[in-house]
Amino acid sequence: MNGLGGLNKAPNGVVLGMVQLQLPTVVTTDDLAAQTDRIVEMVGKARRNLGTMDLVVFPEYALHGLSMDTNPEIMCSMDGPEVAAFKQACIDNHIWGCFSIMEYNPDGYPWNTGLIIDDQGEVKLYYRKLHPWVPVEPWEPGDLGIPVIEGPNGCKLSLIICHDGMFPEMARECAYKGAEIMIRTAGYTAPIRQSWRFTNESNAFCNLMVTANVCMCGSDGSFDSMGEGMIVNFDGTVLAHGTTGRVDEIITAEVRPDLVREARENWGVENNIYQFGHRGFTAVKGGAQDCPYTYMQDMVAGRYELPWEAKVKVKDGTSCGFPEPTRLFGESARTEAAE
Image 1 (cartoon, helix red, strand yellow):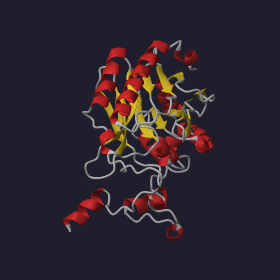
Image 2 (image 1 turned 90 degrees about the vertical axis):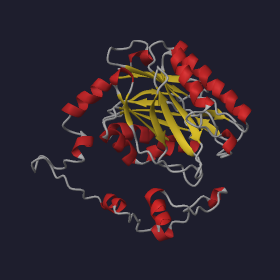
Image 3 (image 1 turned 90 degrees about the horizontal axis):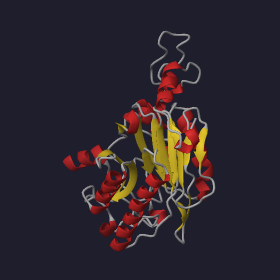
């Protein structure tokens, strides 16, 4: 099915390369420039490694490392030199690329941002991580939703980041908006290994969607990222898996979006992405199309509250050295300012 890792590409195939990039230490602007150059070099390696590759994917934190440093001097902007270098690398190597930056935010903490750039150097997907890994990560919660684009060879492509993938609603949103391939980039370390594996598989199977996932790899002297490049087919079958933890290894596979579409259109049993909104269609015409899920109704109404909410101990980042926040998010913040 995976064409020997993409060596034998089918006309309808999309060949993915997941880079288990060496975890860097980035403190200064010189460090940032050097790591930018390193990523550009790895784009070239990906192209030389496999001439059939359509998309090379770099992990979350590929550019900044795991320090959680929010120093404005090493934050990036969409019109900055780092993004410009990534665009040029995609042009020079005739390949699509997925990249990670920490994006400067003039009004608060930076955003954890993911980009997909096409082989003409155009940013096709721009995503800000919706679910930072609290309380450890200080990033501003994303405000752009989950975009789905037309990717290489006509595939429908989406991107989520790390902790996002632990919420089944995130993968479901990608699939609901048409994604046939969902990329998940991460910086996860070894304690998350098992949950990383089974969520990558369940996100695929529950949505009849390919998931392509990769973490940073190796040690920076403090943290040990695990690599674990993992490409999972729409039926939950693992097509490729980087289990050795070898830094800078590129895990590859060919995936078939046309077979995703075929399954979504033809499966009866376990066509869960369809059946979720048409429950019991054998018994009632069209299935029940109500929303029986209290947590969804409450979230839309702005009253999401767990039965044990008052007993939750960790509700901000003070345990990880961050000050207690005072700003509100989004519409709540605008409403408060207007009042």
